[in-house]
Image 1 (cartoon, rainbow, N blue to C red):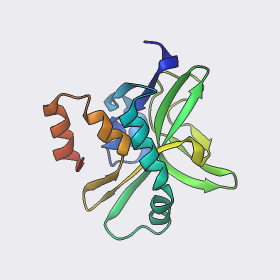
Image 2 (image 1 turned 90 degrees about the vertical axis):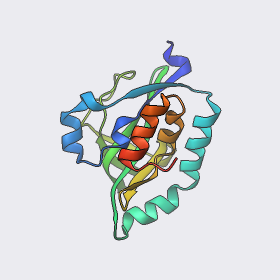
Image 3 (image 1 turned 120 degrees about the vertical axis):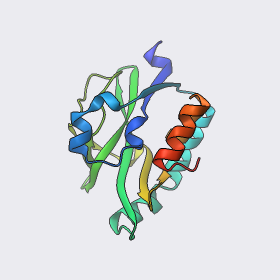
Image 4 (image 1 turned 30 degrees about the vertical axis):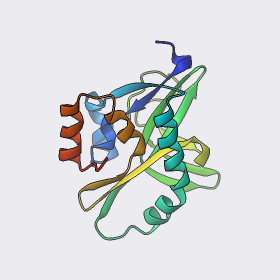
Length: 164
């Protein structure tokens, strides 16, 4: 697999509504999936997430009752390699955002799990949160369900509240 034509996406942490500290201490549960950079479904999911980012950020700034576990997914590049990571928790900065990298890198070597990462909205590839035990957003995860065995995808939908 050439990193120049693949991108890695972290899947499992989208399911886990736990603190970043717990996530970073148990990275073995994270599942990394390779997707071609020109995958049209993934490109559409990222575009959908970016198009609705302002609405997500408005909710995050004043979370309605029944909502929790707000997170962003960002792309990190290292030479020709790129990898998408969940950032949990995150906050605004003067130049964009900052937050804790919640995944163990596989393809890039310029970041580590648990690191505080600064990024801009251009780096954001997805967002998500939980509303009344159901997942909202996480558009890239829904695309990854298409690459899984039906039983595995159904398990995640049923046990983690995905409606995609």
